Length: 131
Image (cartoon, one colour):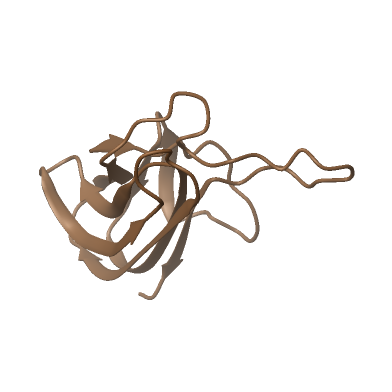
């Protein structure tokens, strides 16, 4: 299992939802959260993502299985995971992915190089605080 890159925060007031985003790790404070994670892989064979608690090492939620074409390793594996979790004291979480094949240059997703392409997003983690 490898952490997916999380390096940018966008939208809304995130104060109180997390205390930090560092080294692909999100720190959640006390509360109840709805979390959705998505991740892409190009030519990675079989793939799956999970939400992982790195403070108290354990899987929070396992995501759907996905697969690309075996052998030549073409095609995109789009993985999805979601969870509702109650946090009683601060924890660190990561979006992690496991694959059967390794692609050094495009394994985390194939970039869009066409004219006027938006930024390339290979993984995202959406967090909402329910209470």
